[in-house]
Image (cartoon, rainbow, N blue to C red; front, side, top):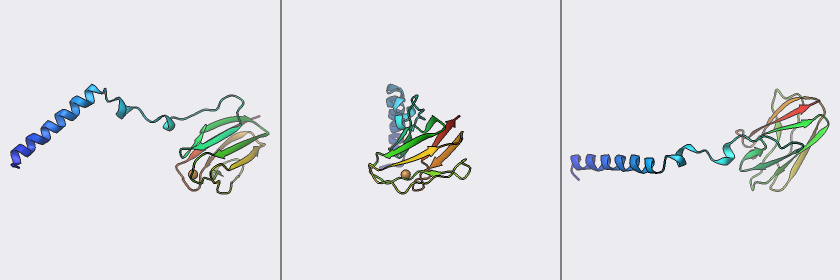
Length: 129
Ligand SMILES: [Cu+2]
């Protein structure tokens, strides 16, 4: 192909891309997947699901003395490990699919934790008095 016609072909591709993008409203490029949105707890809940490589809800508020239960709904193994600055240390074994782990929070405070296998998985438990 001649260099100039190749350039014209590329330009046509770019124009096509822009037109099709405008027609679609670019919505598919701007809307993040639902699982990426931060989730908050439903009132009274004390369970956290682990699914799609995320803690759901990612932030859970419970009263002091509550046992929070995490259940792995993924096929991949996950752990629940408190961050270094957490008011209390907790650490689960590697949870296989369907396995769960519970920890009772007795001190008010903000507890952040993560999955030691997938450091991008982060969660927070807020304990109120
Ligand atoms: Cu994980």
